[in-house]
Length: 246
Image 1: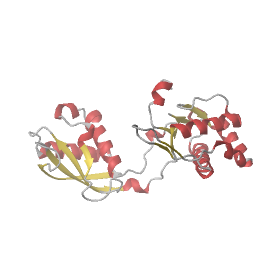
Image 2 (image 1 turned 30 degrees about the horizontal axis):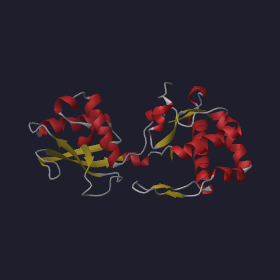
Image 3 (image 1 turned 90 degrees about the vertical axis):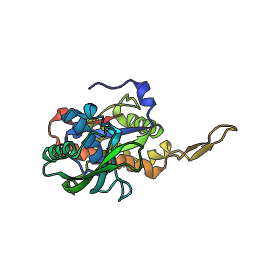
Image 4 (image 1 turned 30 degrees about the vertical axis):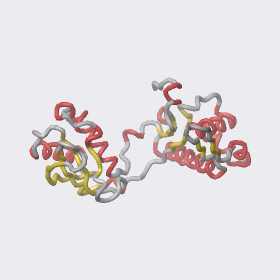
């Protein structure tokens, strides 16, 4: 697998840990997830996003009705091209519904003037059905850069060898052994904790670091353990038995 340069990881505010190949596995979807998925479908699967002038930030949850993280409810497609009529939107929705058959069903409602964006129409869409809520959510972990450095250092010191704190691959067998060591000697987590800190400099923004508690580190280890268990239960091929992070 190709990885970005370490310098690129350093620019990120956080580091994610995910199971190899799970990008191909369906997971529960919120309104926000469905908006992102619909955007990708219009741009890549249908290949008409550029032609219609529909960009990724043009498909949004309607936050005036419910939460971004609801499973159903209204969403909006903002149309800078005022010549796009309901026939085109109906075609997009029909094809997306076929693409997500049995998982998500959308219904086109109407096109009218946007109250948020000047000189833009908006297609009102309803997420009518969302059966992805019944799908098991895969374990995943997202931590700040500083917490990633501490977590990777902990894993290294418990037998995982030299790891890049900003991105790479965790071998499941090695990770499992490291977790066992940590659980048998959990007092070692104290060495990786950090008190909250506030740094103030005159004329500059105040920098606040929330710290890193013993319980926080325990939670990280527990999620990694869940990921190991998922891999061993569901991915029998040794080539797939990795956890990526970056």
